[in-house]
Length: 381
Ligand SMILES: [Zn+2]
Image (cartoon, rainbow, N blue to C red; front, side, top):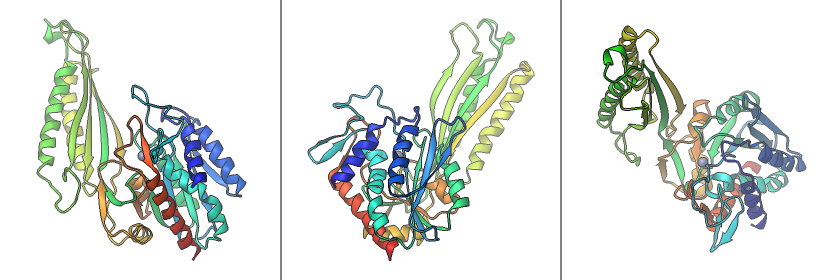
């Protein structure tokens, strides 16, 4: 247990807030794995300042299990921490620090068990997959998964170790976050005929999105424990105009469409795009340089695969029968989308994630440790 706690402290000590480079933590992990003769593979971002890392322990044969975690953490700015967030403190059976729950403890447990994996003489491999930029929209993992699919022998299952208190989660919604940039023409507010108000056109598009949002509520998926059990559409930010007496040239607003994993998201997206195109045409008739531009960030939902390889394996290892859905997005849908059977199961609670004084209980660390130990035994059979 002490070596697991030490590894948690070590990983937390790297300030890997998503806005910063994660290369120092990868250097550490790569050197650690190399001590055990395990070779790491990096997949860099375009700028070369962040990377994913994956590594295989055991023989390069089919039937491997991927243990997936992200290296980045959410910021600590403006949070009231009682202790240094990057220095793990143990108190009352809990380890405090940024990332202890979400989700460095999971990766630390798996790394701490690498010597046991080596000793166990695995018949089928365990693959470690560590991504960057998960917390800012699951940006890192896709390029790594693409490479894993190309280079690894067929994989049996993927376990994404986001904090579920070691329960099995086989479903989450997809996320489609849009930012709409409306550009019109400024003029004095007393002369609206000389301008083209970005605010007014943005408002019209927002009303349309509001209608779609209302319609989504009618499409409930019964029999699941997602709350709410329908797709949602929220508008989180509106920023438009600079003065009360100026017709707004620019307006930006954001929307966040969280779809049930089986939804055809193109239906909602196309409605938004079509309406935006219609409004843009109206704006251009007034001012030819006017525009409505939409940026989209998407995270795929995770669909339940009943009787799937990952769910069956994790049921066996955890002794649990029940499965649940989680309200947050993860990289699990990205693995599944590329053909890997995937579930989410990891130590710690999402209730503590992203908060000041984030912690994981030692009981959860112990349970996570026992879980990976059972996986090692299984892969050695
Ligand atoms: Zn996470």
